[in-house]
Image 1 (tube, each protein chain N blue to C red):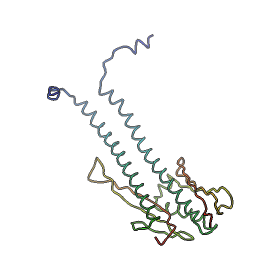
Image 2: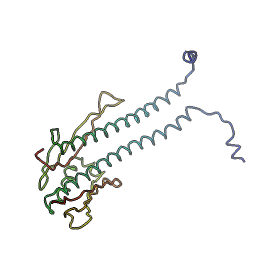
Image 3: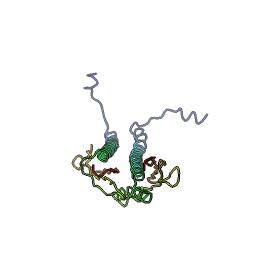
Image 4: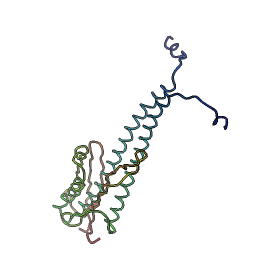
Length: 132
Length: 107
């Protein structure tokens, strides 16, 4: 009852102070949200594209030995354009998995998975040419 | 309506001092959203153009690197100026990177 009475009491307040109390945390959180969304969306776009390009390089290889090297070559070329700080903050990792082994066999399903940083992951799947 | 517009009202220096930094912070936020949108648009458009070049051929500002066993990788590294709402004199520059595998080097 005491609490209810206290809460129902009329107090004179300042509109400026209330406005400030509401907007400052709101704006701060919103600023953080914007920067987080930007970095996430860039990482997602980057990882999706890298996965597509690396799996394309893999399946178009002329032979089994060069397939993985080609995929990693694409990633290394992309990494060479990034700054050392960016490479430390958002390390890019490629892993290739296949439905059947050996990987580079006719009609086999190959999936390239790219991991950017600790949370963003994207994969792309293609098939090795049947008439190879 | 006219009465309201021409009516005199009292303000306070405190409210002005409070609202001015708030507006500044709000404009910075708005600018961040605008810059983010521009960067994402440029990234996607550059990637689309480069992928199109890798498939259909064409010329551009990209660099071509030979892939092991044939084919090549097209790499586009473009530094673009992004307009801003605040501080118009010094436009911010951002780097846009696009990459595409070209299977047919004769393109």
